[in-house]
Amino acid sequence: MGFLGDVFTWFTTAANWRGNGGIAHRLGEHIGMSAAATLTAFAIALPLGLILGHTGKAALLAVNVSNVGRAIPSFAILVFGSQLFGIGAKPAYLALVALAIPPIVTNAYTGIRQVDRDAVEAARGMGMGEARVLFRVELPVAVPLVMAGVRTAGVQVVATAGLAAVVAWGGLGRFIIDGLAQGDRVQLFGGAVLIAVLSILTELGLGLLQRVLTPAGLRLRPQAQRRVSVLPGAAAALEVS
Amino acid sequence: MGTSGPLLGANGPDSWIWWDWVGRHGDALYTAGREHVILTFWAVAVGLAIALPLGVAAWKWRRLQPLVLGVTGAIYTVPSIALFALLVPVTGLGRTTAELGLVGYTLLILIRNVVAGLDGVPEDVREAARGMGLTPTGTLVRVELPLALPAIVAGVRIATVTVIGLVTVTALIGQGGFGQLIYDGLLRDFRTPLVLGTVLSVALAAAADVGLVLLERVLTPWSRSRAGAS
Image (cartoon, rainbow over all chains, first blue to last red; front, side, top):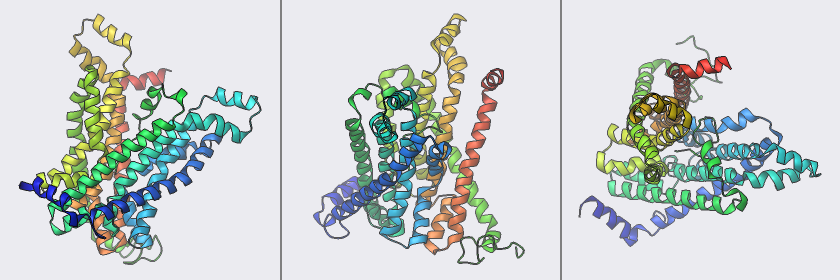
């Protein structure tokens, strides 16, 4: 059957799916951890990005935080997490939250800042308070970029959760780390396929969510989003781990 | 080494950084740094060698674009640990696997910037080149690519910083450069190599980024003189 046949057998053997170390359980762990970390990061990063964007304060910090985040290896953040908080789920969760915050802050900030200042002034002239300006004028226009940040963060979290097996957490990375440790290339490859597929599905799913949440009037301008991603200083929808 | 005082709290095996250990492991740090630089350099160089022709092709023939960006985008989305693991059965545990994976990550970034750079060349410049009698290839090599250079260098900067971070993950397949120190710190529950590996990796990324900005200035003298004139 060869190697791919062995991988196929690994996937189709019912016993590999059951139990605490089974594929189903690991998949559930992976998705649950990723969702929890991304949502926590969203709850922290969105208000921060919106306030910074609305007030125009701390521009340098808001824009560069994700560039610095790119330079710090996520692998190192996980290991630091295990040094500070012990091993297992806790350091993995905290490291993933820390990783997911910068892209959301940067994109929310950029999204708010790129709103036409004339529109904002007009809203103020109409007597809107600052909160209403933010939520009724700026935020709707910023939704595509905010969601681009969530998408970047979410994909990165799913990816890095695959590394969290090195700090003795579970998730799908377990198959890779155990496969490497035991010299079991079938398990290694199977785990890699699962993580790859989950990442691509996350990317597609969050991309769909981004499109659905974008106000209808903004959907005609894909150009504006494409432009930001080619420069290193911009709110790039690029992050890898 | 005995003269170096405790910079971060108590100086010993349990502190975040133990300077005595650092002093005794200069050779290991040098080896790790050299490996990190070599892995990064070849990944970006090979990536650029692939991305330039592919980017030009995807720019010239628009219909190729979804295919090229789709495939490289899919590679980019696959997490590094999974991509390396997918390559292990084919190329084994070692440098080839590490390099192949790293090259894979540079492609989307570089191709996207090549296309964006070429897109940014003003139409009248192109027409002027044609008017001066340049062939399409001549226009590409002598006018369009040089004008696209800032965007291409921007891509090289992102790719380089990204690869320097990803090299650390290759510690899991026996490579890793500074990542080897981080991994070592994890396995031995020893903070000094962990801190050193992280700090040196970030410093390398920052240094490479600054170096590439300077290189861009040298390569595009015209943009500097224009900035001086305005």
